[in-house]
Length: 165
Image 1: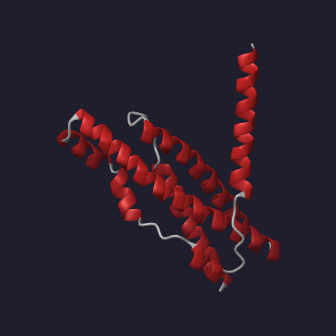
Image 2: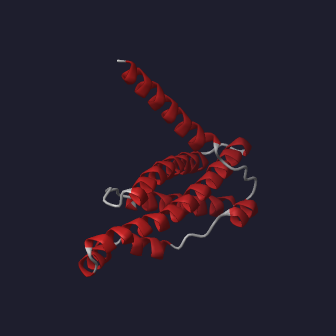
Image 3: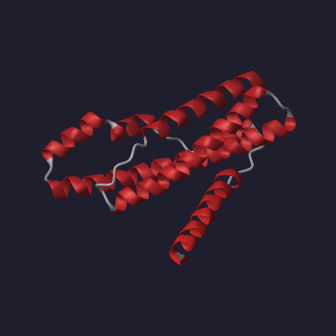
């Protein structure tokens, strides 16, 4: 019974921390120049190759089970680096959209804020799952939806910047 209470309390603390980091772990970005200067580039072509199921199956067919587990561990570590970049860029976009909303309210900025915040929260969750995968390579997760969401946020940011110009 006590273990259940402890588990519930720990879960609530974890969820609260998750929300706080997603919402308040943002950077203050006051201009598009600042956003451009601080955004970390992400090569989405490389990410697509890392997530391509046909390529993964090809590698699996060429390697022994032990070698494939090592490959999966390394692939998870590379994906962690890309998800960290996405998280950082999403935090910048949340900060930019938040600052933009304070300056002038419109629906496009609110949408950018909501979408960037969603990507930020999703990337934090994906980091947790990818760290698990780097420890247990047989752990199965889907990260391709995060990269699709990130691309949507980037398109929304460019649309927002074009309207502002």
